[in-house]
Image 1: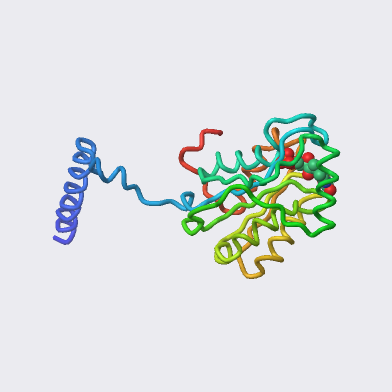
Image 2: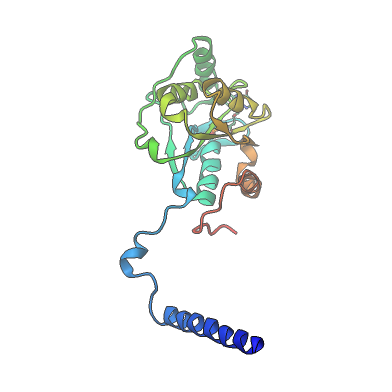
Length: 222
Ligand SMILES: Cc1cc2nc3c(=O)[nH]c(=O)nc-3n(C[C@H](O)[C@H](O)[C@H](O)COP(=O)(O)O)c2cc1C
């Protein structure tokens, strides 16, 4: 009798389930309007901020897209996040030596080079990647301008520093973020050599995976 009851119960459980599945195949279980209202994913909360320079540069010649901009684009492809390029009010020269002189002067003056564009709606993001090249062993002074301009808004975010360099590494990106935001969650910083950036997509993706950044569904770079 007990076995029979279990049999009946199983039948009861099985039929409603299978008929549900059939219905789902026949009609769209998500009405049209709901498809436009998909739930937010964590990737909607990701913003990739970067500063990068074009023109003549060390080891790569004359470039139309900066090394850090390329790294930022790989992060964007993987995450599907939004991006914001920090554009200086006074552009840096294409000439490498000239840029070196300006950079050294800015550091000596503890300058805050002005940013031309404004970052709006920062409150909608929770994970902010901040990327830059290394100039004289440190992030360019314009990164300080960025951090100081948005210090209040960034104070409750997760910050992920990244950068490109030609040998110095990017530890200085981590220390600068810590200096401005001692209390925020900082995820592991990652850097690549500028001259290697174009062959570093996989390494960059491995780092993103390691720090638990989810891959966007629309990522087609497998
Ligand atoms: C003014 C200046 C100073 C630099 N100083 C350093 C440095 O101290 N250490 C280093 O590893 N690379 C240094 N580099 C190389 C850049 O960090 C590297 O080329 C980087 O990939 C450039 O990124 P970008 O194309 O996004 O501007 C310097 C480059 C410039 C233009």
